[in-house]
Length: 249
Length: 311
Image (cartoon, rainbow over all chains, first blue to last red; front, side, top):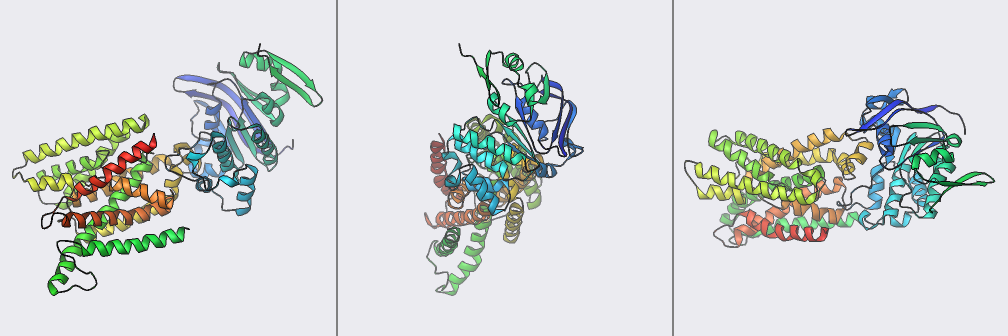
């Protein structure tokens, strides 16, 4: 990993959703060129952390600082130049086509547009209505919409949840190559193998108020993950590292 | 492709204007009126009235498309959601309290429309079903309220009641020129917002992440939709379904982006109401049908069809 400039910093962040405290005291430093995976059980606050980074959820304590200023201090228009977000699928009632949806994400650059639709394998879908697509196809369109935005920070919320294996691999490879372009990619992932192989840092949110961030090797230890998800894992040692497999019996 | 569609739309528009000018109690050739009498009818009766119909129809269609984005629901429309009714209630209330002043009536309609929209907005998060149900009930309430006001009016005039409740283009309280100017301003301002409106089609969060100040845009849309509904209602009473049918049709033809939908709706809504008005003058000539009857006859089946299609 190339050590570059800071893209964002999270200082002592505590988040509350409704009346429930999600976690407190999270610290993260993100340098350009890195991928950060967020891992944790359902409802722990992974998406909320992305929302806080995107300026859509006000923290109860602490700050998310992008380029020396707290996220809340930027206007929405300024923030849009720093951060791109892939979260919920947009509604389909108004009959947008894939091409129109992508154009709303911005960028008039024809080359990068062509590159992105090829990479996400949606070039054949451009004229289709969003409502006619499968969830996997729609998810690829959403990933592409983020890729079209040349921001230093990309946020992904379970980008591979509907993707087939081929496109999951494409997406993980894309994260590695795109991070090289002086970006930080923060992504919520459920697949611990994907997280272990793509991330430089991992944020673990335990759903009981705790959250920590650390180097991928230190965080993706079997003991940590077993207690995080309350499962048994079998560790297989391979040439290039360890793989943790859940025990289904 | 778009060029062909636009050319087709323009040609169709001219044909429709020709027809709307021509038909009536007697057919008049708009290019060659046969007599001085026909010339007078054309220029002093038909053209001003059709211009009112055009402006009001265009405003209703614009208001409809803004409602749909504001509420995130393609079935939203001032009449269906009872907002036309609340605007009419406000206008009639002002008419009773400050008889004669068009501007106070418009202000009353504006306040009424705002109240109507704010009530409706409380139901948005509950989904289409409850939103429409709330709209139906609110429309019934405002309808009853208008009937109450009319019953309390000193000179109870049944034709006034009809004008407010079913729409009437024969006599606009607002001058034609003012209506046309409002039409232009509303369209231009809408186009100015079109990029943000497009982003809002993706939902609130996506729009925010694209740099749109969503709460501010909502406030602007709320005021704009209320203002335009108020002007249309003051001029012509409550006319339903133009704001529903036209934006939907235009989206089917031109796609969902507002730089196309808004101008096409402003013109398409105008044309539809011109035709409806021409038909309402001709069907039982020399008597006239309230134009709202015709738009409801067209609009209700379309609305039901859209409801069926959605599920």
